[in-house]
Length: 115
Image (cartoon, rainbow, N blue to C red; front, side):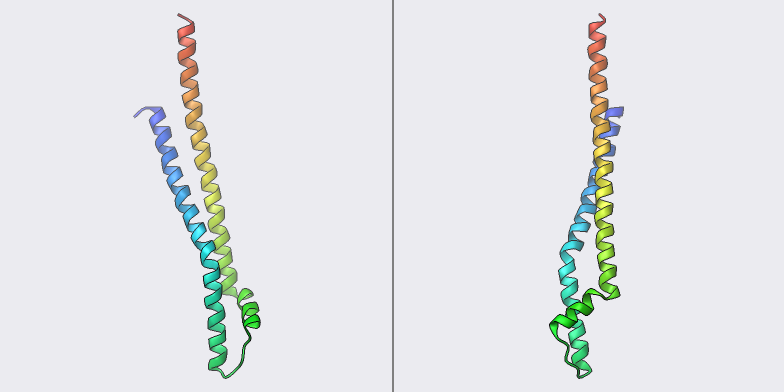
């Protein structure tokens, strides 16, 4: 395996990791509304079990300010940040690969010119 192959393999591995992290972040974002709806439903059911009436609006406010929802949002944003950072690393490796290709081409052109 030459240097170019090694660089390309490092890029490929980084690209796969970035894609997986992006998928995780996207799934968390899509799951946010499902998690919120389930939390609201749980709060309403718990209130009804105690014989209390909880409006949808109040349950939603309670759910949005709950520790579990805030934790979910934190994890969702952390996943997006990780995906973005891995994408930056992947792009850097891609640039390194193409810089190597360019250097090799320049070297060959200079070698031909010196003949």
